[in-house]
Structures are given as C-alpha cells and as structure tokens.
Image (cartoon, rainbow, N blue to C red; front, side):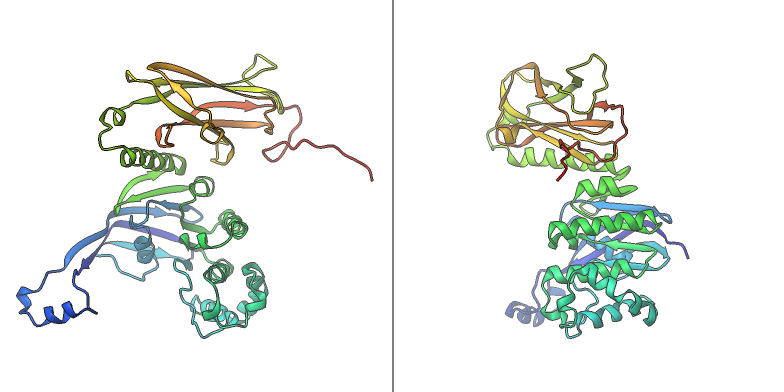
Length: 398
C-alpha cells in the first residue's frame, strides 16, 4: 500500500486549567461549589491546518517553539485526535517524535529493537536480519545489551532513529529530536533521510535546520501560533519565515525611545557579480571576482551597519558566506544610495549556476533587510567537475 496523507481543516483544542492538582489551593477549590470554581480556558494549539502528501513526496515543517508543530505530529501519529477536521493516512508509518518513545526502560537496547519493530508489524526473522545494521548505524554496540534507562539522551535518539529508518517504512515522521546528537551523527541521519526520499519513502520532517528543509524537502509548511502562515516551495516558505524572524528581532530589539530608528527603511537594490579577467558575465573556476551591492537608505540619517553575502546553489545548498559582521567591516549607509564591493582573488567554485542572498544588519547585529536571490551568476570551466569547491592541490610521487 502506497503512503498517502491528507489533512483537512485540522484543529486541536486543549482546556487550560489554572489550578494545580498537586497544590493545597486545589484541595481548597474542590471544597467550593462547582459553580464557584475557575472555569478551564480553551486553547487552540492548531487551527484549520490542511495539506496533502502523496507517495514519495516530502514535507518540511518549520516554525518557532510552541507554534504547534509537535501537536500536529502527534495528531498524525494518532497519539491524539483532532478536535475538528480529519486526517487520513495509508501505508506503513514509522515515527520518531519523542526521545525514547516506545522504549521500555528496563529492556535492553536489543530487546527494544525487537519490541518496536514488532509493534510496526515486522516479522521476527526480518528483525534479526537487520539487527546488526540497526546497531551499527546507532553506534551503540558496546551498550546494546544494557537497559535503555541507563542510556543518555543522545544514545536514545540514535537508537530510536536507527530503528525508525530500518523497518522499511513507507512514511517516515521525524521531529527535532535529532538535535541532541553530535554534528557528525546529525549529518549521517540527514544523508539517510535523503537516501530514503530518493527510494520513494514519503517523509515529514520537523526541523530548525532551515538549510536541510530547503535542500531535502519537496514542500514546506510554516506554522505560527497554530495557524499556517506559509505553504509551498521550501525555498519560498523558508524565506518568508526568515523575513518574519528578522522583522521580529528588529522590533523586539529596538530601544523604547528609538522611534526614529525603528522606522528606518532599507533595501538591496541590485547585486552584480563579475569576473575580473573577462568581460563576460560567466566566470571561470578560480578567477578573481567582485561582488557589487547597491543599497538604499530611505531615511534622512546615516546608519552604520554590516552587509552579509551568501552564495548558494539553486537547490538551496549554501556554499559560501561573506560576513561584514564577522570581519568587522562597518559600512556608513548614508541617506540615498550606498555602494559596497567585495573582492576575491580566487573564486574557487566548480562549474555551475549560483545565486546570491544579501542581508543588511545594523551595528548591533539586528537584521534590517534581507534580499533573497538578489543576484545570480554562472561559473563555467572547460572541464566538467563534480562537487562545489575547488581544492588547490598538487600531485607528488612518493
């Protein structure tokens, strides 16, 4: 059976009670007439969320903490039921939404592998056949016969993820629990998710790693305050989310009396990338190059700030960053137009198409403006190369 997920107008309401059941105050409240007790307050964790995931497609869900992402995943895994709307799912599902979820603390890691796989309907002989691969992927072989109650959070996450991806699911649901692992294991997990995606597994991924959402997912969903704020191409959804975060940071970081500063308006007007050895727009690998940025300050005051430049491939993979903030290169942005130029003696990029994003920060590091895909250029070499970065090297015979 192929994996297929449909969510239509899904909403989830909780009842918030202000009194604590373990307090003396609660005991006193129980002595009051029922009509005198505080009434629970309704809280909508999700409101009118709709989307569809077809076989082999992937959905990346983003949003701030407390936005409703985990509530949505619990509805998808049927841990909870929606208050309104409906969710229809087909196909074998494997989920990792909480550390140690489904693990019995007194069972060993090996016993929990068998238990979890059995719950998902995997036959015992198939479990045994995959046992070594699951253990090796989780990198916990010395502790596999130790009760999981002695595992660290990272070990729990590694084992849980390894089981989830090795039971051949048709739909994989993963929450941000991978954030507890080290960087190498996180990359290993993302590589595995990408391989499963290519093999036709449907994937729902909640992550704060926006770059991974852009690169790996077919569709994006941005939830804020339980409401869908963006849906569609991941690059566009992530851009909208980043813009929202920038506006919020600038607004929250403004001084109470900085009325004039809070109204400063900036824009990135144009970005040009040129090779310094040739007149064509195309640049050869290793050529010196310049990036020219034209900024506009639409106020009557000069503001000192920084310019950040990000170079990425069209698929969202960020390959280089030039940070005026890190280099401590303050720019005096006078009223009207300001020109900034960055020079590199060697643009060590392999042949291909690249895009440029530009961000403007004030002298406190707060984002003032962001321009996605503000410029584009092509690196064109005579020889076909793989990868992204050209590494200077020489061959020696020993």
